[in-house]
Length: 265
Image (tube, rainbow, N blue to C red; front, side, top):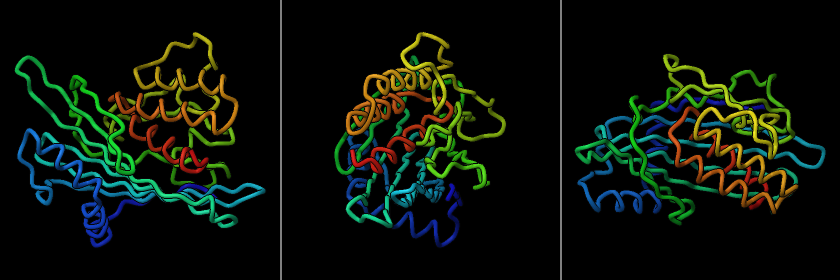
């Protein structure tokens, strides 16, 4: 049981790049980007891949969640993150599932200010699109790692790929650094994370836009006690988090994509 992460290098990374670039959703995303700029999908300037294996053990079932995440950066203005999630159940193969997501960010200079256009494709469907203002930091830095603990002894048997959201309620308020860079400040959330926040209460005050997403999600859980009713709560949180550019935004998205897949939303 636990959560295990490794960075993919050499042939492992090359194979992941080849596999993901052959996916129809990647081609669909590239065609969308090509509508207003030239881009050669094979001419990326930086790539980074990660594998995360999460073991979830309970009295009834043993579930393994495999996350494969690939970042591709094109020049300084296009960043693509692709995530594949696979859920396998050793007791009931009817509860297995697969999910593939492409998330694209494109910088655009309007003259007055720099904007970032974002869109997402989940299992073949366009599910999200938004435009946000670029911040003062480099938004297009690929994370150094995925900010999960490497000591499996610290992980709950009902683990999430992002352990502050452990499904048995043993998690804590999440702590993330923007893009996992050690030079960026550690952000401690007031609402993001299990045992964090105050249900539908008005306090504590969220620390940023992502925390406001988690606050709304907490209240949705209060009003929806179990699955499948909570599926809509998770879906709303995912798209809310996608519209933010805060420390841990991507990890909150993946945490609840995995949860929706595991709970068969």
